[in-house]
Image (cartoon, rainbow over all chains, first blue to last red; front, side):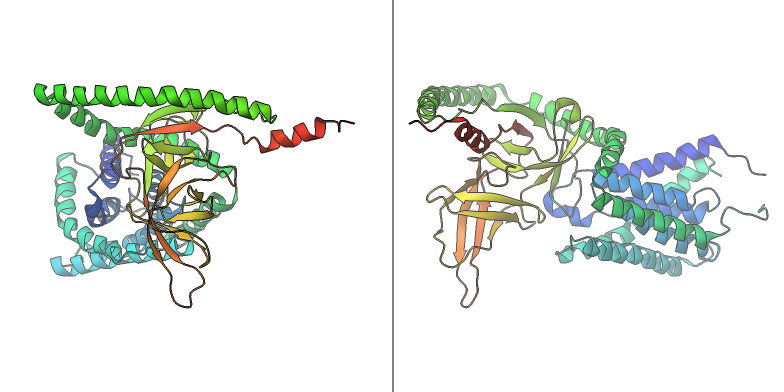
Amino acid sequence: MTFSHPRSNWIIVATLLLSLVLMILPLPSGVGWFRPQWVLLVLIYWFLALPNRVDLFVAWSSGLVLDVLQNNALGEHALVFTVVAYFVLRFQTRINFFPFWQKTAVILGFILLNTILQFWLERMLGNPVISGWYWLSVVSTLLFWPWVEILLYHWQRRFNVR
Amino acid sequence: MKTIFSKNSFLGLRTIGLIFLAILLMVCDRYVPVFSAVKSALLSIVAPIQYVVSKPITVLDSVISNIESNRRLLKENEELRAQQLFLQTRVQKLLMLEQENSKLRGLVNFISPRQERFLIAQLLAINVDDLSQKIVLDKGRQDEIYIGQPVLDAYGLIGQVILTSFNTSVVLMLTDSKSAIPVQVVRNGVRSIVVGTGSASSLELIHVQETVDIKRGDILVTSSLGGRFPDGYPIGIVTKVERGAGEHFMKILVTPSAHINQTRQVLLTWPVKTVANKVKLDHKDKQPKK
C-alpha cells in the first residue's frame, strides 16, 4: 500500500501553479505568439515521471483552471489536456526508455495533438484562429521541453518527490 | 509495487468520462445562463494567481517611476497644471450648457437625465489570452460592476464587461473579433455597427450599403440603440472607405480613439436609462386639452 507523501503533492502543485503563472505573464504584443504551453509541458513531465500520482484528474483540473484564467470556454483546455494525458499515460512506460531524439519526436507529437485539438475546438466554438502565427507555439513549446525536463528532474530529485 | 487495481486501470473509460464532463461544461457555459455565476465564483478563486502576477509588475513600475529625475517631474507638473486650467474653463462652459439644456428639455416636458456615475479601475498587468483582446480590472461585483457595463479611457470607449467575479472583472475590448457596438456618425447621424478585427489599430464598420453617406475623417460615437451603451462616447475615426465593384457593402476601416494597449487606468460608467420610455408615459398621462 502506498501512502501519500504530502510534500510531494505540494511540489507538484507548486510546479503547476508556476506554469499557470507563466501562462498569464504579460508579454509585449508581438511576442505573445511565442509563448510556450507551459502547463502542457509540466503536465507531460509529471505524467512520464510519476504516472501513479499525477493522473487524468490533475490534467482535467489544470485545464479547467487555465480556462478560467484565460476566460476561454469553460472545459476547453480540460478536454484537450485530458486527451493528451490519455495518450501519454498509456504509453508512459515505453516512452521513458526511448533514446533522446525519439522521445523528443514523441513529445512533438503530443504538442501537435494539443495544438491541433485546441485549434479545432476554438473553431467549433465560433472563434477561429485567423493568424498563422498560432502554430509558432508548437515550435517554442518544443524548444522549451528540454529545459522544463531538466529543471523538474532536478527538483524532483532534490525534494525527493515520489 | 502495483496492486491489482493500479491507479491507471480503466484509463480509457476514465478518459471518456472526463471528456464527457468537459463537453458538458462547455455546453453549460454557452447555453445555460446561470452558469456565469459558477464561472464568476471560479474566477474569484483563481484571482490570487492573477494578483501574484500583476502585483510585482505594478510595484516594479512604481519603483522605476520613483527614480525619475526631479527636473522632468517639475516640467510635467507645469504642463499638467496648464492643461488642468484649460480643462476647467471648458468645464465651466459645459456646466452652463447643461443647465441650458435641462431648461430646454423642461420646456418640452422631457425629463432631464441625472448625472452619470463614474468609477476608476486599474488594469491587472496580465495577458488574459494571446488569441483574444481582453483585459482584467481590479474592480468586481463588490463595487457594483455588472455584465455589459461600458468601459472607457480618457479618449474613447474601450469595451464592455463580460464577466465579473467578486473583486475582478474581465473586459472584452472593442478590437476583439467578437465585439460589435452600435455607432452613429457625428456629422449626419448615420447609424451602423462597428466590429473588431483582432488588430489593435483598426475596426470595421459592417453592412454599410454603397448609398450611405460616410467618408474618410468622419467621427463615430456610440449610439444608444440597443440600450447597452449611453450615446455620445467616441469610438473612432473613419480612415478608409472602399467601394468594391459589384460588392453590396462598402469596406470601411476605423481607427479607435481610445489608446488601446497603452492604458493602465480605465473608467467604468453607470449609464442612466434612456428617456424614451419616460416620454411615452408622459403622453399617456396627459389628457387632451379641450
